[in-house]
Image (cartoon, rainbow over all chains, first blue to last red; front, side):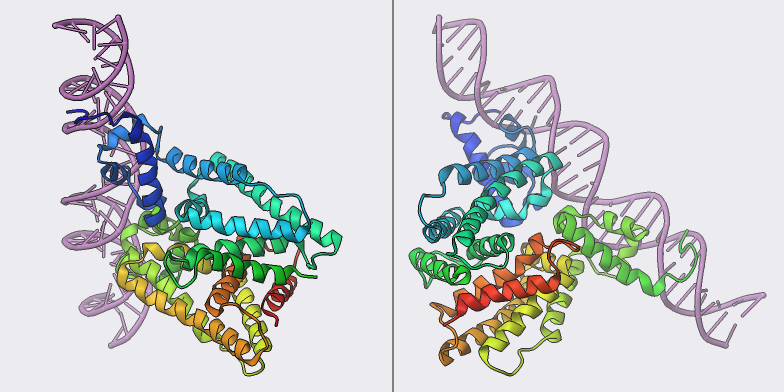
Length: 193
Length: 193
DNA sequence: ACAAGAATTGAACGCTTGTTCATATACTCT
DNA sequence: AGAGTATATGAACAAGCGTTCAATTCTTGT
């Protein structure tokens, strides 16, 4: 047997990626088998290898595309440091609430990347952190912010904002706008001069 | 063949747990095999089952003991809310910097727990969060703190503090005392009235 | 010196893993 | 209608998985 009917041609690739994303996020890369992914797509395991050279690349491509998009989709606007920081925080939360599974994988599965892949992903992640750190450093020099340490504040703020994905559930007590506003308020005060 | 020589009796159990801890933290529960753990201990795989009923229990016991100890080891001191919050923050950082691998596992491997085990661990984790939330709620009512939302602030602060484990390395630019002080300063400002 | 029990081995169990490949089907183009 | 190609199957591969267990060795108490 081969193709059952209809033209699954251009849809199978994306569907494999979607299934991998969902399953990796739910059970973890190492705990998910190629056969599980195939079953989710409605295809035999062998067919996956028409769309990805191997399991590792499936993971790497998800993470790489995620970070490429995160970096390409948004840039620090002109303006005073506080406005830049607010834009960063609000964008970060919005972006992360929109893609919980990708964000989760990009953080949790780092250790399952082969060394060369890990190096690439880490570089991209670092580029993103540097944007926040630049904002903080500017504000520190201009006197808008008061911080004991720029790098530490960068890590602290990112950890705090990204943490929203651990508890936020759609349709809960707070809207996305509420969450954005509350987090921004805390960050604003934390770095205030 | 059996025991080679000497009395490995009482030391093998702990050594298995230590090896499991290290390997789980490094590669993830699902990616580590019982044979790998055994090799690390210098024993055959079958011998592990004299000390644990199965692999799952090995993970569960690590997490359970970690949280039991975290909860038993420290309690909120009497005093004004700000002093309580400072004590919580400093203790959290100190405790987490002392046990990076346990902390990492307790967060990363939640999804690899079987449902009943997960429920127990989640309950313990929740108990810990509730301590911070109680401090924040008290301070809110007394007017010492200004917060839009107590639960959200709890999650934000814990995420921020726990994040220290993602970047702190022994012998780096900042001492533990520095880190403690800087984080506390940011938390203090973030919740300030 | 010897028996009892604790600690460990090493082989085996059935199953799953990622990956490959000859084969077969469905679609497209002429 | 028929050839050519893209897409998929399903069986096979060697390797590794968690776990069990009879057999073996070491330690301890008498």
